[in-house]
Image (cartoon, rainbow, N blue to C red):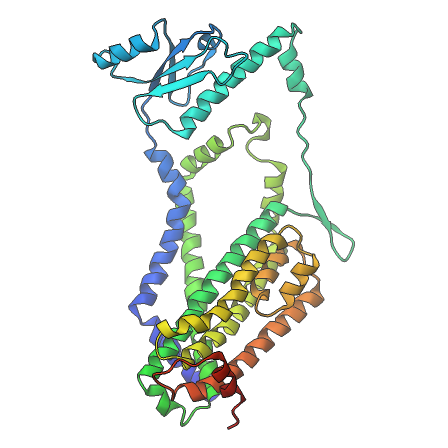
Length: 440
């Protein structure tokens, strides 16, 4: 363990002093914070100019009932579209944004509506106009039934059912749960593991290739066993990954809190605009949102998902780092490693695809088996944890994952022992198998 510790220290010091480490440590959290405040900045940069639209209503029903709002100003007109266009061409209507033409039989043919604009229109503008015209036509059709207070009756009859979900634990107690939060946490942590495992696993492979080309390892293997060298290199880069990840969490949390406080008004306005159809008596908070907030602030739930993420993040990195290290020790350059990387990347891509189905049924046989297989468990089990997983499945999955890591380090060491002395030739899978079976 003393030799492994020296190698861990060397790998850690060598990488944290690199300019790439410093840049990614600073720029990555800033990118996340930028994504967080982007909606608020867009709200501030949003144009404030009104868009005046002349309405040519051949039906005589819609124009008088169109209400202004959302930067749209509707102006009923007695002129024809041709007359308005001619006036615009003569320079009399320079502030005109567009012309809205409503057909005479719009009640029977709601598609007989055209919008002509002098600037590029947007989906937001077209949707707002369509909704207002549709509401006017619906009210007119209801009025034809000649029933007193029919709109009020329909409004009272309209019923929104809100389902509150509870999960009964093993002790028989029921606990409020949020399926939206569980799905969001599963998707987020699954993606993070997928990205970071490949990011730092590739870093291990590249480090092995660089040292192999510098001939340094030919001297090191005379005093260090291949297993010790592989274990030290993998654990050394693991400490770099954990330190960088913790720095990101602190910077994102602090910077995100400051940004959220600074742009609180704009974020609230954006949320209100996105949820414009929400009833006023809900005050912007639905029971599902309230359940998500309670779950997100529950210490037991947070410890469960973050603890599970950390265990499987480390285990997944260690396992795949050992596989990437084996690839790096077998080739001379990164280009030659592309073919050998295929068997390593396929399980992770498969796990990411299966994760989507797992979130629909986290306790299906497919989900259980893929959460046991070490090559897919880092993503699948993290996706299942927010929904509740039996303890025996968690224990078995973790034992298999870390046991596979130890075995893979031994395999990588066997390949490494032969590969460091092989130059100018890319080995096949059959040759790698022979290297593993060599006895020393």
